[in-house]
Length: 294
Image (cartoon, rainbow, N blue to C red; front, side):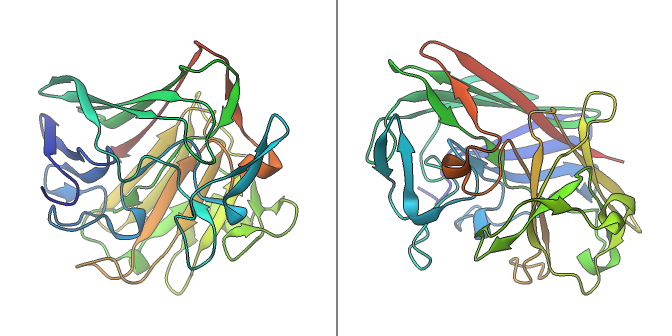
């Protein structure tokens, strides 16, 4: 079994995506000859969370500790060097195929009750491609007996064709930035650098920041990476009011890359409560985001 399990290819016309069994990750997305996300080999684990689904919280929970209904919860420390829990509970779980056709696939996995997580959640992720690109729809159903807060995120690394990341410009729909120290909030939200809303040239810019207050246009939040070969847009429902932007310099076979991560809440939201969603027993939440060539 390869590290990401079975590989599922979906296509419509010139748009093609590869989704993985383990973690329901987005391993590749192309439109014709244009790459819209950074990829990685089927024989390796996703580098730095590439393509991952982040449920039932995105980013970090400080010390893996949070409180639910007055009881302290202790999550496994999946970021052991820093002593935090990171990116939810499903990144390394094999998903089951719920539905599949040539242009779409629905994958499902359950978050069972476990140390640090008290309420079971049944989750699905639908990946669908068409001429406009990729649409990803998350559904989270509370199959327990008490309400529970949660968050949803995803970890795509955008790519504007063959252009080097340093030759690209990033435009965000966000209006605020949350100061972070070691990946955790260190102060209140502040106004965003106006250059990021107008289009910031990425050469020499290092980012690992959480941005909030994303403003929708025509009903969707829209972030864009533009380069000499064209642009790629990451759009999302208004529920995805946060976006994490991360610029590592060691993506395999690529070097410098840029993750643009749609999130419903910021880092450490299980403690701050900021942006958390809540599902009651028997209730289902759904939300969508996508990637489109421009």
